[in-house]
Length: 179
Image (cartoon, rainbow, N blue to C red; front, side):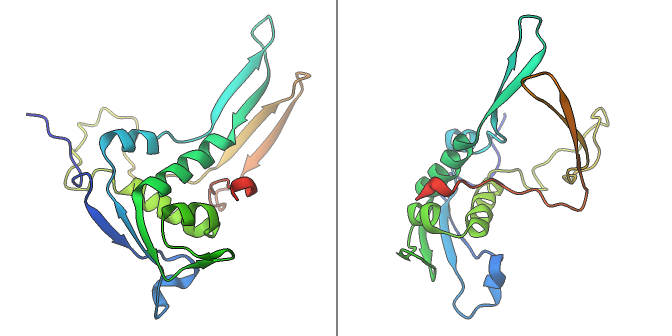
């Protein structure tokens, strides 16, 4: 029989973020969230930007459009729906006491860390991961840093290259239009 692994949906988890040296604070920020259902999990795990590529009549790429607002909405909805309470945290607009407050008034790093913790709660534990028979191309269970060259195509058809350095840390884009 196949069994869906992971914590039971609705289980309440208390998380103490590490951002801003929070864990060494005598009154650290604490966040209580509920483990998402499988439907909520699917909504959370739609990573990356929604991208559409424009092509000319020959099929040659002429540009692309990225939906950054979709990422902001996904984070805002996840925090609003899954974070039950926040303790010991104050934003510029006043106390941050729930997921909606956190999404709208929390520091970018704190928001990112809480969102990543919630998404991590839906990933299989080491005990639940079955060993591969070696047929996979990847044997490394770690996430690689961005490293390499990306090419951009302008609407006029010219290209430019950018190099990603391995020492850079990937970041989540946050729109200043949240408030």
